[in-house]
Figure 1 (tube, rainbow, N blue to C red):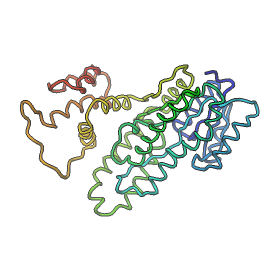
Figure 2: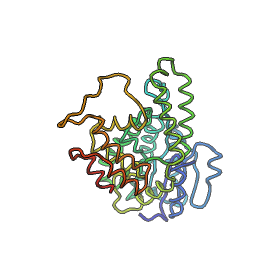
Figure 3: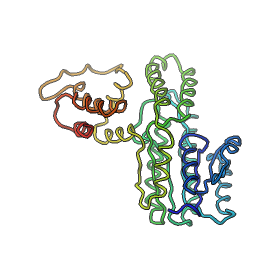
Figure 4: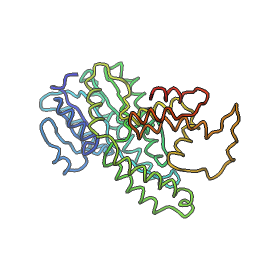
Length: 344
């Protein structure tokens, strides 16, 4: 796709992946309409090839104004790309997440994107050879505990994207899903703050049920904020996909995303459940004792070790991968063994 005569729209452009995508597309010659909610962010972003626009994607009037801006471009440029990136996240158990927060997540992470697509799709089709990029998450494939509202909204984005691709692909619009793993963005800090706020409203019974889970997720979120890959990596994938003549339908970004996607597709739900629980240091509160192992039926603890080994690579380098792979006990071959072999 040539960029010199094209407009690109990026929502959620004030920070993180959105900001990096704005800068990368502008560098490649697109005229970027950078959607932000606050005027001070707009003032900060204005630069060559970047035109900030105030747009809250949950505000129908502001979305309509964005569509009008594109329809009346002073230089007659056409819309070539739309990047739906705006989003929110929090961590809290399903039972303790107020319905208002569920609705907020779907308003921003899903319905807002639907509204922008409905408003801009005619211009994207008219522009010819358009690209519609929905920024999802590996959380749209693999749902971790306390990410209920976030994961549910991202699963909705995944389905929405499949429907769109099958509806407008024949009209010349390529629909692309970006599925990042852990990205170093301000979202994690905001999520921790909201998690702490919600935890303070929990009942005594809820604290008894979930305090260990919340503590584990709090620790994980802090680690993600510190160790995530830089937003530019995701932005580069987005820009490359937009400019590709034949983009893929989905792009995983980050080693953790790639491994989680592979493992979730290869292993049973129960095996993934066990891995998640062990990774977070959680123990079962109820249930039958684990059955002893037999020659023809290894117990769950032995079986899950073949899951833990490949996933432990998320924190290691190449030598770690070889050591982890060689430490897997001898068990009947299965999908996890294939993945371990790939890591050697």
